[in-house]
Structures are given as structure tokens and as C-alpha cells.
Length: 173
Image 1 (tube, rainbow, N blue to C red):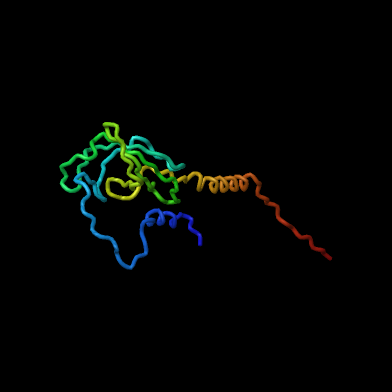
Image 2: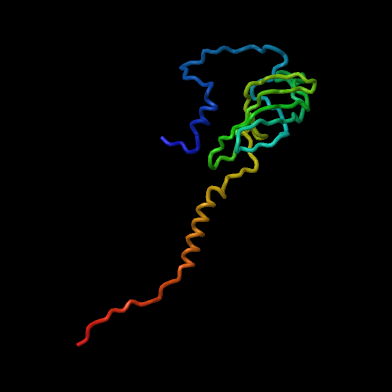
């Protein structure tokens, strides 16, 4: 079964924590601390480093506004100016225009560090990964076909057209 765009690997990327359960055995977990930032919270940031999907790489971003606790919205957890560090995946399939990103570390302005595992990065609209100017490699994809067509056309034009008529001699009495 051929998977030219690597869709199976992309599905596996997001489904690693899902299990085939017939019921939900988990219980509601009470708040552990007044200083929690819950799942779905947004950390607005601006990229400092670029992304080139030819190879996987590391990225850095700058938190652009203060982020407060999820419960009350009054306790400052991540101050503006904090740096985010992460990595991006280079497995961009043909026709895909987004790069998968995960954030791994936060370095606060006071120098303290917090490892955050591999939290998924999303754009301002909440879409997974980042999208910008995408080099879809049109020249590499179609360039050789165009070149072959041009060479073939050039050869056809270089070969002179034969205009000799074939004649058949007949015996006459």
C-alpha cells in the first residue's frame, strides 16, 4: 500500500497518546496549583529564527504579550519577552503547505528554564503547524520535463524535413 505523501506518519504523530478503550477510566483531576496554564491556552509569540523545511531544525520565538493563569487570568505566568525554543519537522509532502512545529523549552527573562515536552505549535488561527512562503520545488519537479520537451523540439527543428518524392518507374512497352 503506497503512501506517497506520508499521511500515515502524520496520523501517527498525533495519535500516539490515543488508546483503544471501551470506556474512559480517568477521573476529574482537581487543580494542582493556582499557577496553571491549561491545555488550549495560547502563548502568543513571534518567530525569531526562520524555518527551512529542506531539513529538520530548531526554532526560537519571543513571547509577544503577558500570559496569565487559566483559572483567574490574574496571575502572570509567562511574561512578555520570554523565549520559546522548539523544533520543526522537515517531512513536508508534495502539495502540503504547513510545517509541523513542537515547542520544548521556555527561558524566562530572569534566566529560569521550564521544559515543556513537545507542545504542538499552531498559527494565530489555531491551525496546526506554520504556513508561509512555501517552495513547492516546481522547478525541480517540472524543470526536467520542460527541458526534455525543449530538447526534443529543438532536435525536431534541427533535422531538415525531407521533401523528396518517391517515384516508381514502370516498364513501358
